[in-house]
Amino acid sequence: MAVRTGNPDKNQALLDDISKAIIEQLQVDGRRSYAAIGKAVGLSEAAVRQRVQRLTDAGVMQVVAVTDPLELGFARQAMIGIKAEGALEPIADELAKMDEIEYVVITAGSFDLLAEVLCESDEHLLRVLSERIRAIEGVKVTETFVYLKLVKQTYSWGVR
Image (cartoon, rainbow, N blue to C red; front, side, top):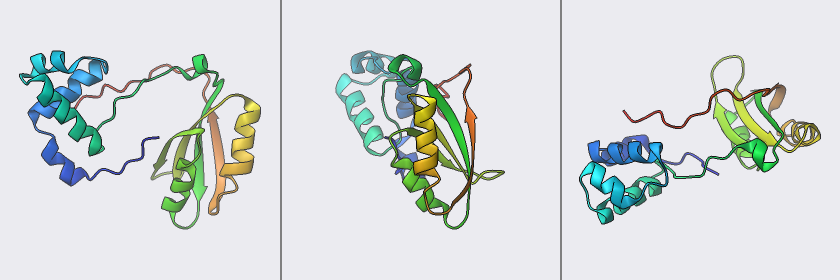
């Protein structure tokens, strides 16, 4: 599970033009070798390895396999809008502990939090909603948006 723990101000020092170029290379192909990245950005393989390690240790990036949930047996995917009262961070922390929840954000607008959930079936989704999410102290209202078709999913937004 990726939980944001990085320090954006501190991490800016890590993000020089070469580090950004390394990130862009990995966004195109996360399996690209350090030697190939080094050739593209003008560094040695060892220097690329060190920079990638620093960037991952600092929480700036992670290199993971992106899978198709349907192919892995998760037949039901949904976004859950949550209205809450009281402090939002403790609710977000409880949501983040759930294996079924892939994504949690605190938001402004109609909902206080959004959580993306992957479940094996409608029954599984119902259990997660009824027995776990709605049982969290401070959760007042949930609205579930069941995904019918995933049209676009990308992780290659580049660097600034």
